[in-house]
Length: 428
Ligand SMILES: Cc1cc2nc3c(=O)[nH]c(=O)nc-3n(C[C@H](O)[C@H](O)[C@H](O)COP(=O)(O)OP(=O)(O)OC[C@H]3O[C@@H](n4cnc5c(N)ncnc54)[C@H](O)[C@@H]3O)c2cc1C
Image (cartoon, rainbow, N blue to C red; front, side):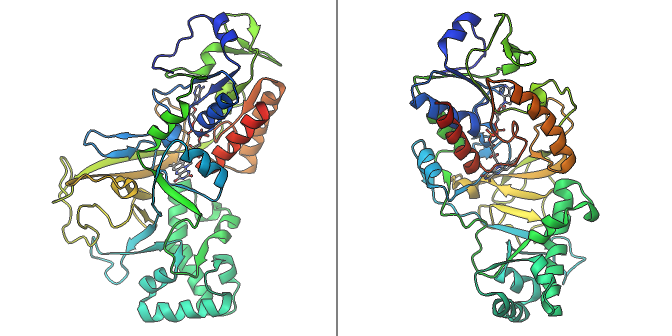
């Protein structure tokens, strides 16, 4: 049952009614809630937003286009258990994600709108687009002879090759695909970029243009939110929206107390929100990157949108009923945004004459209420800060941390679903 406004009528009845509390209705919260409910547990889910689905939430915009409010989400996994679990709540649209890098065309550096684009990860097709058909083919054959077909070779490996032509490919990929994009995404200078990350950038000796090679890939046929609605629709689950769990809790050294009831929370709490906020930021804020999303809706036929400059009609990327050629186009060398995603290309929604895109701008998270912390900035200093909060959390027996915020790490959707199923198993 969903209640739009969070209010537990009486704390004492709330205490007796549920076997477990879960804060957050994203993947971590919703998957664990369902798994526990099916094991007979009465579950209370408290979600501070006015919707379920966490960052995977999707909805129709004012033009009727299905958009992902917190950035484009593409499902992919090799984990059959997770795929089977989610498939109980949705059918899938067969979708294989492809991403292209878009850079100024070096042959026409002065002509605005003349651009080159090729698949990322950089592969044999990219090589031919970047270096010309013949030269690209020659270099591709050379790489295959050195490393074997269908292999992913890192630019570190290429740099270590004594053949200067091969080493030059590594430099090209570093400059045109990796370094500027990473600087935008993480706000770093090239010197600050971890050499281990740089070393892992792959060149794919293949013509497989897919971004992921996982066995199961797709988009929920009716969207993520529908999938979450079905997942949470269970007689043992109650969901309160617009409810921050912290309003009901006060923290003591070894216990979590129920505010107003004068007693410790007698059941486990799965917390999927930011760990620093749970402890009132007592050791300071955990650093994150956030994203500003700029949504634009375009009339597909002439691409003019109210208030927008009339676009360059010579632009080689405008095509058919769509804004761009692929669902996601990465701007790896210029522009302030990192990438543009066009939702209709992801979702397959048929809506002639109109299309919505989103541009992503990355910047530091400072913790204002309108911001969302998106990417944990993993480094030794931040890990040490997280460890202090974790030590506090470990003292509290009822508390179980789950998810990208509570664990201060990046999870793909399949990985957090897998972890949520595991935790439910442990708690049940
Ligand atoms: C831009 C972007 C794109 C991504 N694209 C992909 C992709 O293509 N494929 C992929 O596999 N993964 C992708 N991910 C990762 C994916 O978003 C995560 O795996 C997923 O959101 C993790 O789920 P979660 O439940 O841990 O966190 P969230 O989705 O953030 O859910 C946490 C929920 O807890 C709620 N909450 C927080 N604090 C409280 C509180 N005190 N009380 C009550 N509720 C609270 C929040 O409101 C939120 O709804 C992407 C991530 C980003 C940032």
